[in-house]
Length: 337
Image (cartoon, rainbow, N blue to C red; front, side):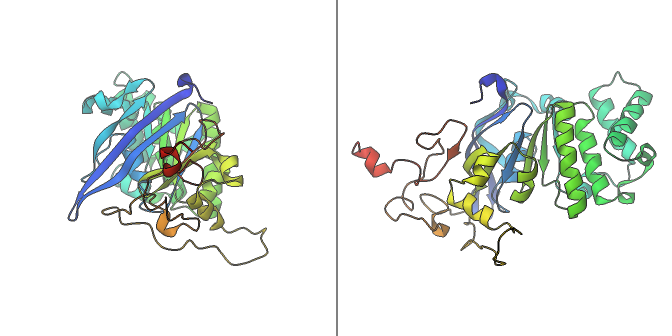
């Protein structure tokens, strides 16, 4: 079990709301999460589950009409919700880094790679000279497998994998503590993706990085993560050690995600497909949000009561699940059974 000194970042009861034509929609709904120092935590779920919204909220980045309406964000003992925007700008880049989903929309097309990197360094470390910043930029890109002379290139002159490495270099430019990587392998082919995942593990070990890896691809998490958190319909439904979750998933949604991954060791060529679709978050279903799609749904409980996100009976705090299959039913609790 992790102690408070092991925790680098804690999300507590975070709710993020969007203003839409149909009213207020909760993109993240009462989420609590701890990220340990030096770990890779995988955050998985279908598109629209709230993963990217959570990642951007942890950086306190503006995301359209989204706004944090409640909760706390604790980074290394400091509540980020109490900081001004200027103080947050000082933290971003220096201690908190983010690798965005699409490098081509994040990198300035009219700036050379070296200008991206040196601008970040000189903004946070104004005492550096341009020569020192350039030397650091060349050293970083070379460490990430890009020839140092390529820093003179523009983003469009690089491949998708190289642009993604530049994004990592931007996150590492000032030796930040936590990197939030939002779908970093989406635009990569399988060969480059494998090399990129190996690189993430190497960087974690070399720089003592803590990484939150956001992805819809649960197979990617199996390759690199120490723990995995599963998100569904703006809520966390399961978290635990990656080997434990993959061997014995507790939540039916996690089970469905794992069964949907192609496995060459299975005789059957047919893929499992979960019934139904994720709910409309402008009017989510009552009770457990997964119950309309759940093969184990219990009529007397699941459509009525929202399950707690808590350790199942007999488990440690390291494992949590939001499912009535693993918690006492509300009726039984009420009568003291």
